[in-house]
Length: 302
Figure 1 (cartoon, helix red, strand yellow):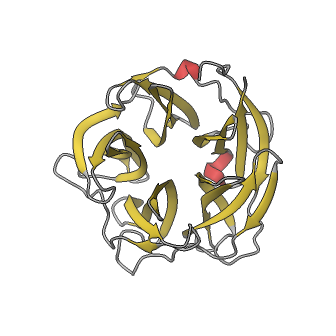
Figure 2 (cartoon, helix red, strand yellow):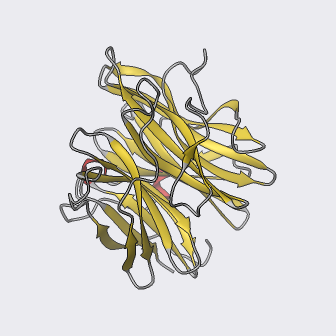
Figure 3 (cartoon, one colour):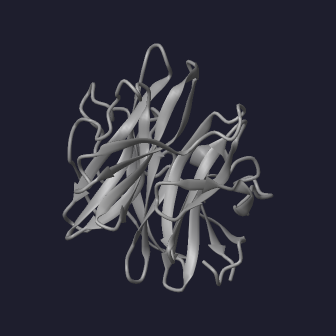
């Protein structure tokens, strides 16, 4: 990243929900890119009239700032009644593995004592990302004695010969509507079965922070960089870097991706995902109300 200034130029909102499809009445949350030669495919979670989220996608050319294609159907259906993803699914990261595409997602369902539960799922595509099939009807990262609350928002990257997962892990519930969670690490040899490192990658900076969410890890040169969402009252963007992907140094002052002046992101900026496309580095993100008004994009200044 040495040739880049540590500053983002916002391109603006690239798409908003249009209420055209039954599964996409509001929100386009957690935008997640899959890189092709001449465009990027952006997966997102969109909600129906009952507030249930499903995963769709659009194809976008960042250079021309043009939408090439919008898929009319969800890429996968909700889980069976009673499973961890029967009431909502949102994408978190997409990884190519041979001829397959691995979609790591967060699955939701409502609870009685607390507002909801959410866990990590995996679905696999054999048709270049148009449709996906569940790898398992159960979460790929389950609760344990050390992590008895939520385990979700899996971001997966391959480091040398292993897959690394950075995921959200609950520390408890502040009240029935508000969980508190930070970011931890697991590894895998095949991207399917995971071993926790029992290590916190990013911890809370102070008692006012109640959520460290949606990590995005990218390697530039010999270092790894992580962008994540941090929440006190509203979401802002946090930043950390690492030499090995295990030991991280947090420094939020290096982000320079802040709220804007428009109604799209003047109160909140959240769920950023950073990626390289041709000669530039881009960020796709959500603004106010967790993606209610659509997807925004920014480009890293050189």
